[in-house]
Amino acid sequence: MTAPATRLAFTRAQTYLAALLFAMILLNYLDRVVLSLVSPVMRLELGLSQMQYAQAVNAFLLAYGFMYVGSGLILDRIGPRQGLALFVACWSVVCVMHASIAGFATLVLWRSLLGVAEPGGWTGAVKTISRHFTAAQRGLASSIFTMGSGIGQIIAPPLVVFVSLRYGWRSAFLISGVAGLIWIPIWLRVTKTAKPISGVDDRPVPLRDALPRLLRNPRALAFMGTRFFGDTTGYFFLFWLPEYLTSSKGFTMATVGKFGWIPMALSDLATLGGGYFSSRLIAAGYPVLFSRKVAMTSAAVFVILGTMFQAATGTWPVLASVSLCTIAVGIWSANLHAVPADAVDQKEVASVHGLAGSAGAVGGILFNTLVGYLSARGNFFLVFVVLSMLMPLGVAPLWIWMRDAVTPGLSATPAQISPQDSR
Image 1 (spheres, rainbow, N blue to C red):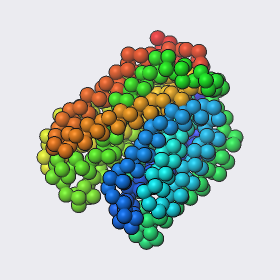
Image 2: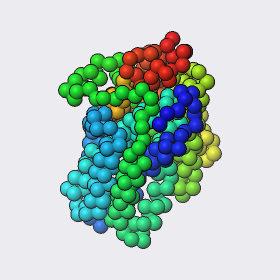
Image 3: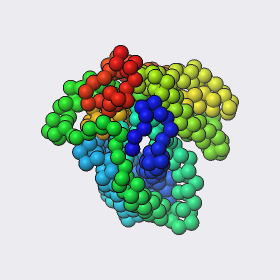
């Protein structure tokens, strides 16, 4: 699978890969959110309290954050073809087993195991684009699979509610898990003959040296800082948007249901546009990492603009304010997942992405705790002030410690790097 370094258009094989990664991330998101959608009925049937439900959610988050780095180490060693098949199989089986939940203990068990398996989807997607797409194509490829989570966020509520009401809440877990198992043979068939782009060498570092080597790598540490600060905005709108709109802006649940999808839809469009934007810059001859950093800096500006209008009242002004921030999340995420493939040794792409993902999960937990404290006091304005500072703090390490330079072993081979990249 080869393509000129500045070509944006995908080959047929690359198109299949991008489509399968999109479907995989959509299923990854769908499997994790089924519980939140069926929880009111499930808790009533099983006699579970809200606190027990919260503990089960925390069990998932802790396992997810811990295993992010583990999944990266695994994928750098067995490759994305076998690695994604393994992780998708594991989380799909675990999702099916959710249908057997009989009480609090089994709920925590299956949620913990789901948290162990699901990070592999993201690290596997990043490893795949690093191996099969050129630097000019990675922003667009990253935006395509990242959109899977946004589309999943839109289609999950009506789909899961329909299945649950018609066939029972357990059937929603069964159908979602089986869909993942169907994806696996298609993935293995399509990737059977897929070849890496020219010059890729991703033979893994010995496992005993992997983490010490990463923790001494300024680029890996910079990316950890980027995700620690920058992931918080996405977590806020994923977990807190309905609460913010109802408690701070006076939206009713009916209004949230009618209009709440708009910021998320705009975020999806921005994901595609943000990835295309950085890819166009690279195709035009700008340095690879410079192009990613420009796009991610523009995302930070959107969050600041959204915060400036946070005092808005009325349905449409509030939605406009929120949408500026969700647009930032889309631009940011499309380029964020492409950075490891551009910046670090090919053999460590998944490990760096996983290590940084764990840092992002820690940052998300800390920020969510702060949001809970401030929201309980009705101070969402201060939440947005903090948000406006976190994304700039996230992009700063990229500007300070990640320079475009031709370094032996980097994912973009010398043949694929424009002369400007050696500056």
